[in-house]
Image 1 (spheres, rainbow, N blue to C red):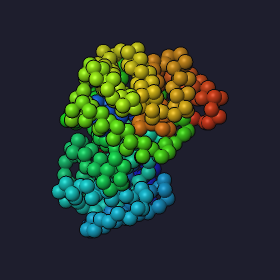
Image 2 (cartoon, protein in one colour):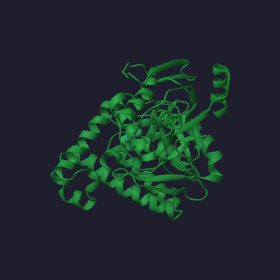
Image 3 (cartoon, helix red, strand yellow):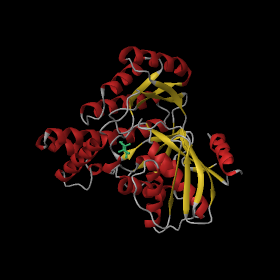
Image 4 (tube, rainbow, N blue to C red):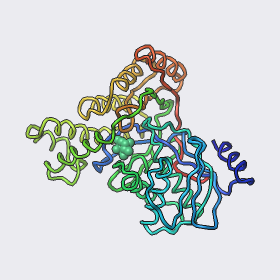
Length: 376
Ligand code: GLA
């Protein structure tokens, strides 16, 4: 990808780019729908990313050519206005949020390309936001502070793009560590890098379904979680223990009860998963991933049949420790934790089994854990 954007830059501008940045997509190993409950998540930045080759401009303009959309777009930093212009709103929104936070921004121009599939639940939008933020940091000359940039990118997504997401995707795109997943405390944004169990890989299982109508369902889940926290008199569900939940669960509305049970148990599973990883315990990690999927399916109700089928088929393959949907749900990708030696057979067999079961052609591939947003 580096050559792709650099060559395209050269063709367009007749010289080599001054700076090349990349920001990755992610998979989440466990800790789903916990981020907006101030809880714990355990994502990993992956070797699929948004890349931008660029050079500074002497004026206050940003001009960007997207190779994927075959489209050029631009804006002036002096007057940022929302124009509903598709992908560039993510870039403009980051510029807006950076200015709101008091950063002074220099203009730049460049070429962008990415290989994070869109709508697959691998956070292509956070990758675009953090690549944009990284570009601004590089040309404007201020240091990269991952957690601060993640908050700013989240603000862009919440208030400019209008998607009310939590902090996970932006934080892992900003702060990922090669070879590791990050245990993130979504309240303090403290992170701890935890290695994958030795001899295992994470396999992405793209169901070839895309998320539809997710925004209203996502906002509804958020509201249900807030209602549950209010019931317990807690600032967030993060603050409610499983014992406290069980003592009062009978008094809760049944739907709210299931939503709360997912979040509270998922926070526990996430902490247990990080501890298992620190001990190199793939079996426990896999079991927790399976349990997470079941909780998301039954209690949080954000799975769909193709994700369930994919996870079930994955678990049947030799060398698979566990499998679950990843990301917000309603379509997109599942992931599996697989013994490294078994991975080649696993990928072909699970793809064939899924296609036979659903008639859809999936994409199944091993991913590796990369660093977060960086100048390369
Ligand atoms: C989406 C959101 C994240 C998080 C996940 C669910 O990816 O962008 O903030 O809430 O869903 O874990």
